[in-house]
Length: 105
Image (cartoon, rainbow, N blue to C red):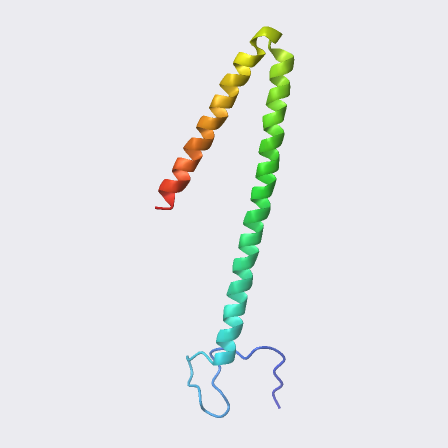
């Protein structure tokens, strides 16, 4: 007496002879799709979480560099150095957007 406690093996033939060996039964395919969906959702969630951490770290770095500029640069040169820093940040952002847009085309 065989007792099955989970989804049927997709390659196992049915007892009634409906499915031949090597064919995927409808129940097995459904579990396969559910597992693929779960894997896809996990990867997307992990991607989003890592991107949130990257954005938070980027904001922290951005404000830390401003503090470093305020402390290490003479007060009369602070606006000039901050302007150069802001232009560099904008240029880097535009470059990354260009790479992203070209990659998706």
